[in-house]
Length: 70
Image 1 (cartoon, rainbow, N blue to C red):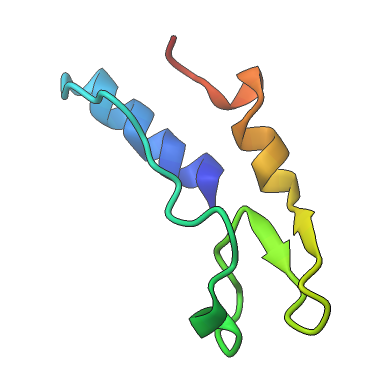
Image 2: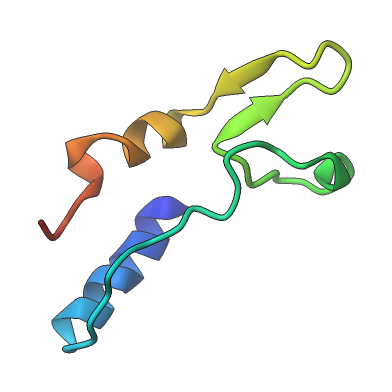
């Protein structure tokens, strides 16, 4: 998801739009998303144990590889 979203941000910058930031919608899976698949959080939540697990997208988004414009 984030690869595509940030690709669109990069395209907007290339088109001349001034983009000052990007906000990932949700760090954690939200409780109301229990019945929605796929979930959208950067961190998965096990709703029985409340254990949290970072998804690969969280690591990617925080890495230099995710930045196309610096």
